[in-house]
Figure 1 (spheres, rainbow, N blue to C red):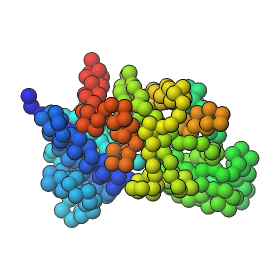
Figure 2 (figure 1 turned 45 degrees about the horizontal axis):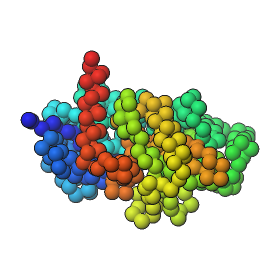
Figure 3 (figure 1 turned 135 degrees about the vertical axis):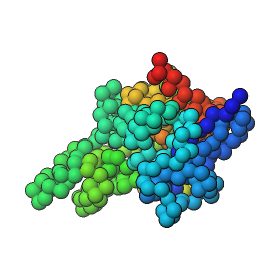
Figure 4 (figure 1 turned 45 degrees about the vertical axis):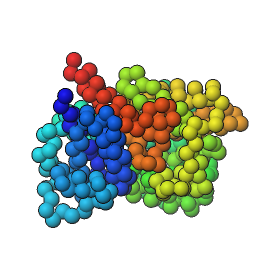
Length: 354
């Protein structure tokens, strides 16, 4: 039986470029183990930070080394695609952040009419945009922390409008609260604020990063996560918990070895775990996700309250990442996990062609 050519798409134009490289290395390793080595042929496809696509030996070199390639002296023009693209039968995109998990690449792969792992345009776009995501969750009745969505124009409204906006945030949410760009993902650009001065600075910084900004009330809770796998009939993993010594789960804490601890399975009551699994699938279906997602929650033991925080439609696959570890604890090892994701991608493509 001939091997399936898998286009491993990694790198990209986002602040999570290096994380993408680490995820791609882990996936490549998983596709080279056990039955996968006889089933799949890996075709690395690397997107430089500048946006130039590279295939062949240069892509393989980046995948093997984990070091970004910024040399554009001999590169093709931007958006000129390497000839290896013609041989790819299924894509495995592992592009984190903007220009990777926000529906842009998913739209391009859809136009190519080649199946790919993960959510389509709608699920990816809604899952990436924190405001659209929260609106989708609210529509299906999932409980959340209090939040306000504002625009760059409101933040830059001058001496009259800006103080009113700050007052509205203080009255509605109070301190501490979190200021987040709507579309950067993975804790990038997020600031925890406790005073009016900090709030003003955080809003200005967020407005420089995105034209839409979300402000969320802080909550004292345990942070737990659940992994979802599937298409029309998704299943949920065991629950994991994240503990850390930082002020909040920021980008550095998330991706630096030793900064955070993952407790799998989380030490929570069985009824709570079951409820989180149900809510995870509900969130997955609310945004029309497919393939995979990681859903994050706040759990308040004193009241047994569960609040959904966010969904990540293309979670990390590094050695530190919660998603593969949750499935490992649920009985699905890493090689089987990547095999299942590719099978789901091709299954979804078959359904769409009927």
